[in-house]
Image (cartoon, rainbow, N blue to C red; front, side):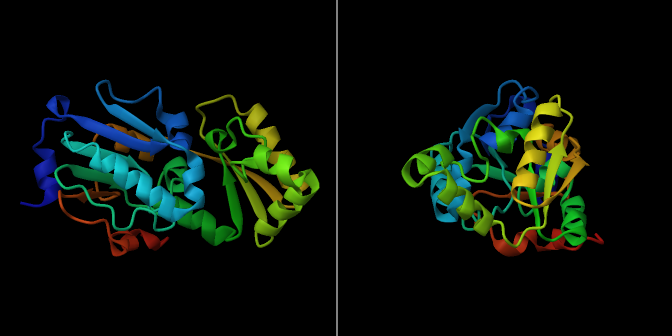
Length: 237
């Protein structure tokens, strides 16, 4: 019997499930999490170093082996999830490059956007958060150390190969404040601005245990491998 078939026979209501995600994804789903799911929320700044994110995720997974299923609210995230393993618990995660696919509704939609404008930088309310500048999670500390002018130059250098800034309106929050912030960032960085409508479709399946071909089911003792994500790389799928 396949792992997918086994999962369909599980009684999820009576299983212990833990959800490990970053604060950007948590910001979108916190009001829709299933009652009884344990949640571990990690800082988005961990994405800046894939080795740091991988190490922290493995620590959380190792500390969660009393759960039947560990749901990861992450895509591959720059290969940060490659090599993760859960000795005793199943792991479920979206089969996508990163969480932008989750906000857009599918890996295929993300690939369409990437084909339309390869040099795109994406923002959501969660990405913007309370930070002074979402491009650098430690912006305030660095500004105090290096000065605003130097930091703005650094950000422009980081994004010099980008041409478009995209605000994903997920519909979960009034968009005016976040749209205006994104527009101002685009203007400051000399990028074109576009607002794209997001959808909850991918999130809904993730949180309702409706884990179809858009998800990876990792059995206990199996490592997450890069090639597991390859099928979703074709925009024509």
